[in-house]
Length: 174
Image 1 (spheres, rainbow, N blue to C red):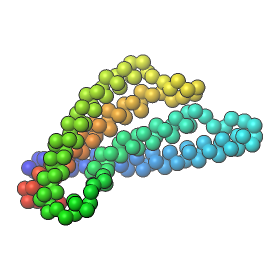
Image 2: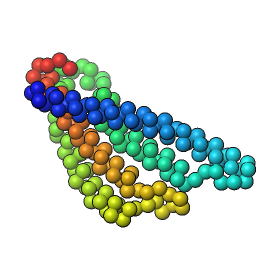
Image 3: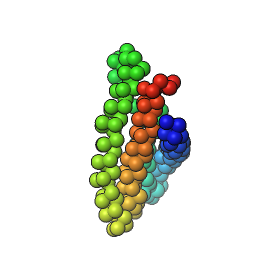
């Protein structure tokens, strides 16, 4: 079990690092949003186009990355929505069983299915070096790759979560 705990800690470190990086991406998202809005209104006053499709697409792609990669971070820090009225009334051991069954029975298979179907989607995008059809748009293959990366990270964090549930069921403290 010590090896599994060590593996779980490594996954948690990776997820925490991703979460830290997402904070900086969120800051960049806000900055680009401000630049885009100021550019749009200032450009209208000056009779120039100071905004661009690339900035708009960056905002959309940055938000997508935060949403996709943030799922594993939320799981790591138990931030997902639960029915707390019921959950808080359950014994810790019962909660661990419910978490384990939900993780192994639903989360991990869902991640595997999404990974399976995402691989071809991502490979096709990379083979064409797919770019947005909008004038001045950004490449799409990196953001499509994030779909695959996100589900791999969520799968790993799900495995870590299952290990922690097994640990709690074996009697170790949370």
